[in-house]
Length: 129
Image (spheres, rainbow, N blue to C red):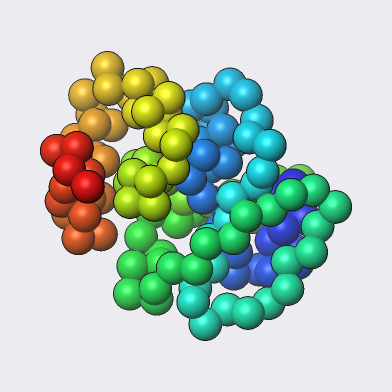
């Protein structure tokens, strides 16, 4: 799915809960593949599976983005820290499930705090909305 979406729109990035799933943080695959694109990107993303698209500003769009290359193709994905910050910011109802998985991992918790500073979302770690 990741490769197929990025073939359709090479600038799309696998984001939030979908990114957490593909990086092994959560076990069950989300019903909908979540992707991020820049606000100015209006490329059509028409798939045979459900896709939810979020438009992000250009100023922080590339923070936490990685390119994954496989033998079948390549795709873009946000790291776990960026994904969790975006889930909190956009009030994703499943963020508690994801956040519970990482709270015990001190290093990752600190990295999420750093990302929240970069993304100007300092209230993410303190639990404020």
